[in-house]
Image 1: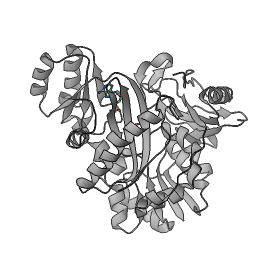
Image 2: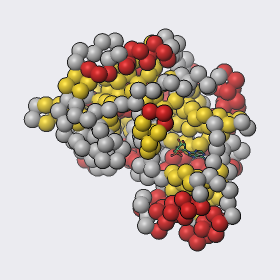
Image 3: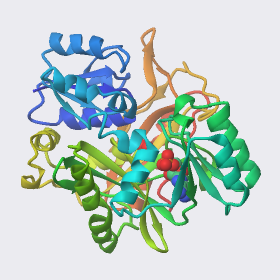
Image 4: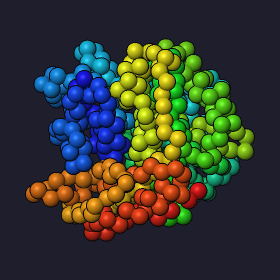
Length: 415
Ligand code: AMP
Ligand code: GLY
């Protein structure tokens, strides 16, 4: 089977790496890819929004399956586009991807189907929301309804923070139309854990749980980033919590989607908070998480293409998906100013890495040299018996990666 992966980050490198190992993959292609992906797949520099251009490439390369990884092309209907043209595409349709692309849709959905989540009120006028925050309890959370590069969530400690946030989201429209509708949400306290799952429209199969570290600096200091490292499974997601999750969250989600007439085929990402009142959904994503995927996929034993085909054919219940009973662990090596002021184009040198896998995120080749081309540059990943040995393994190798101002968090997995 000839497979095309859409996207070009560390998550997509992990997806390509896993697909490459499949007995069923003949040819592997990626748009746009990065310098690491280019070593294992044919890459092509096209925008992920150029559906017609990608379709030309699909015909040229005899692609049988398109794996759509990032949120934006999913929300814009790439899976619908290829399916209508008779090409198999893995991922939710635009309608199904609203679980992520509209936080108001997701919230109404959870409330309708009794899925535990933070209480919230949905506003589409700045005046109404300003009136509301006058008497609200703090902290509270403001969330832009639409996709906002992961930055549309503002945690407000005071009324002034909230008023500034309302201006940013709804008046100066920092995230464009994503802020036309804004949710005001109760602030949840607890520990965050991620569970990703495969779904075939009818059945759901969980991947190992995981945790990511979103803040830029050690000790959870600094700005929120796309994620600075991750590990799987999470020691906090116990078998009791898993049972609660299945009964109260995962199965009602699948049943709810079906009742709405939505056939969800792809990955559902559940961002969860373990609160004193039980598990609650913070957010759904309609795709694999980044960097969680780089920690989770190295644990997969079953052929990845078999899982994708079972999802597309609606027979996930018949497939026994096997995972290694180990810990997957990854640390992001980032550009100096990430996430605010990223300087790109620095030359990279990599020593002999032993016992680890290096996923490229923001890398490119310029004048024959490997250079940085993004905020998150690499995810260095290792698999070991437990978190502590995985930490030792990855941190023991990480300084072999060198470029100007490179940095990483040194406390990934210290939970
Ligand atoms: P989201 O984009 O919805 O995942 O939000 C980004 C991050 O903001 C989450 O990973 C949480 O750390 C935090 N967050 C979002 N909603 C809440 C909430 N209701 N209470 C506490 N923290 C939240
Ligand atoms: N790691 C969070 C996300 O992928 O949205």
